[in-house]
Image (tube, rainbow, N blue to C red; front, side, top):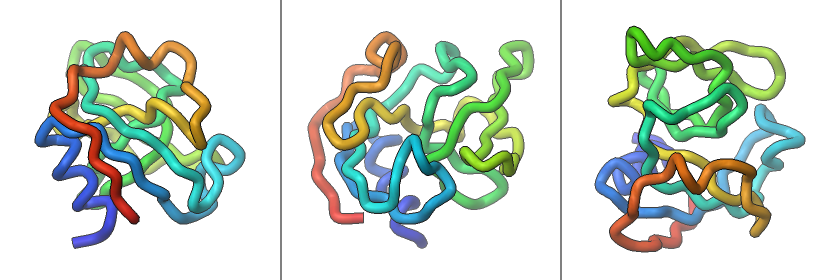
Length: 123
């Protein structure tokens, strides 16, 4: 189980989680080791451009929603460099990125579900 799997489990359980993801696939939106806050999300409210924590084909990603298919209750997940990870169902979208290094992402508050707690992690 990877670091993002553990975070996904906590978010799926209702917690808002603060952590520092690593990697360069989301630059410049998220740089490696920047502090992000991810909260549980109502997947039916997602829009293209939202950054979500989701499982796609067995892997957990903190990536962009690149397309939505409300009729089939699924979203397409991609990185910020043009690579499409694939489609995933709403039940595999665990959370939405609320802030990056303390800067709130526009329009996300109305998409988040009420969280049980704020959990800081070192991921």
